[in-house]
Image (cartoon, rainbow, N blue to C red; front, side, top):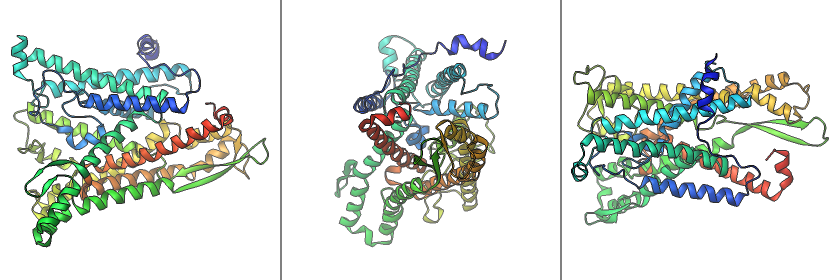
Length: 488
């Protein structure tokens, strides 16, 4: 008996969101999307019962915009388990170890059930160290005393709440994917990054005698008002400190480059084999695999760093070559330091006295980060294309099934596949490497609100695709015949 036969009773009974039986009107899709977005913001502002507020350390802070969670809330783990499960399944599927054919309806159900089961397991494995290890999510002892229970019992209560939050975000993603516009993962990333950028521009707090702005505008206004910008230190602050001109330039530059790259494409002409005059084009974009594979790369780095944090807190005699951690809970030397990605300008600007690390250590760290992001971006882009039905073979079959063909070539899937192989693999590698390079560059130069470069890239790219999907939905709403052509 194969593993599929043994696991089928469990995987086919995994809870799932029912698919709509017919066409969902565009306004209803927008309503579902807006409702889930409101629930997301609501859950990010609820602290788990029994948690000591303001006393916890957020290791995932530098990855928050990517994982779309909120530290100290019910959505503590964010989309991390979903991404980690996707990485594992993509690697297993790419190596053909699962033995599942995604074109087979039965195997599709098994694959989706396996993914959900894996997300639930990873959610538990991610939440447990945060609750039971170190001071990631410390217990409020007054709550334990009031309830007359032990600290461990309160930890179990916190773990249950964080676990339920991680499972909720899984089904929220499924609701958006089936009943809303776009995907839930993309929507949550846009929400988290947008909130961080807006806060970076307009956050309010008392700033001495300058005023009550603490965001980008407030810092610039303060520097200009008190005249510090005309001094050497003031000019350095204006250019390099958080909320500076360089961060604004980087944010705008990344936005422009991603929008431009999304519009750059090779268009392969198509014509219908039976309907004379029916023509179309198949676009192969420069960022063909989208920016989403970058989530997989950064999530892998986040998991490595999380392992380092756990070892540092639980292994008293951890060797120095493996990692030495400073007062801020971040590695300052050793293996975990060199594989820790650059997240902000202050981590590498030794010439401005922003870091105590030696220049040669910083150079090695930057080289490893660049190599990991560029090579990893290209590799994960290839995996993404092959496992999501975007490769040459799958694309050729889709074109064949739609009744289209490439003018001047025989109507044969193998012929179309050879044409696609001229473009798709090369563009996939180039696009993945380009996205990785942009992500590292944005982190090194800084962005408004301290958003990570990968988070900014994801937000811009997902927003652009969401705009295209909304335009397509509106077009189909105005022309019902198009829904029949595309099987909607």
